[in-house]
Image (cartoon, rainbow, N blue to C red; front, side, top):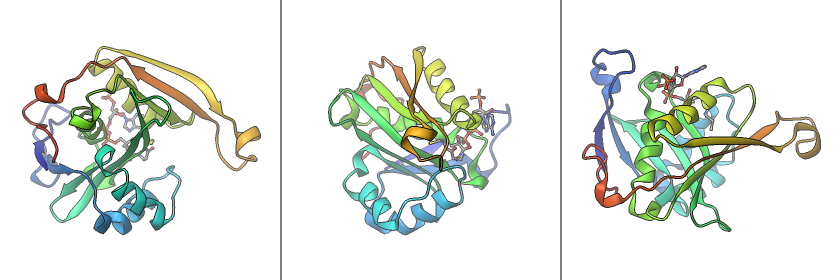
Length: 192
Ligand SMILES: CC(C)(COP(=O)(O)OP(=O)(O)OC[C@H]1O[C@@H](n2cnc3c(N)ncnc32)[C@H](O)[C@@H]1OP(=O)(O)O)[C@@H](O)C(=O)NCCC(=O)NCCS
């Protein structure tokens, strides 16, 4: 478990309510709260609580919860791509409304990248809908912060894959990264 202090992105100190988050792997007890957080973070697709429970258990080492006191400020679900062991696929990133504006999304992804389980990870992949400006900004800033590349290609199409019920999804690939959990910035530390 890691206690972090986030820098404000507006050049002023964060308020106590939003400046301190405890980053840790999710657990089964978080599943229902994660489901509520995702439901409150449009345009994310909601999944069943059962699906969130699997993320919080089977994929806990590649997922992260940000706790803000007793409430959840953010959640990232991810997994190592089964056919590409150097790729961390970031499934969903959600930051609660009260916790936004402090780059918590990028902080949670950095935290994941510095976990020992990600020592062999050289790329992040995710998918983004063309209209999700916040998500494009988040992943562009991760590429910039790590001084690496972001490439995007059309992936799932509204017409051919979603029966018209969902926006297109572009496959976004960021990297390469060459990070080492032993050299994690002090404020992130290694996760337990
Ligand atoms: C995307 C999300 C996780 C970012 O939350 P956050 O970490 O608090 O982000 P911040 O407010 O600190 O902003 C991070 C960057 O995104 C930009 N940004 C944030 N919201 C934005 C918006 N609605 N439109 C355009 N840019 C936006 C900020 O300007 C900032 O850019 P910078 O790094 O160049 O300064 C949050 O908005 C969210 O949960 N959205 C709903 C769910 C979602 O779309 N998830 C991503 C897809 S998986």
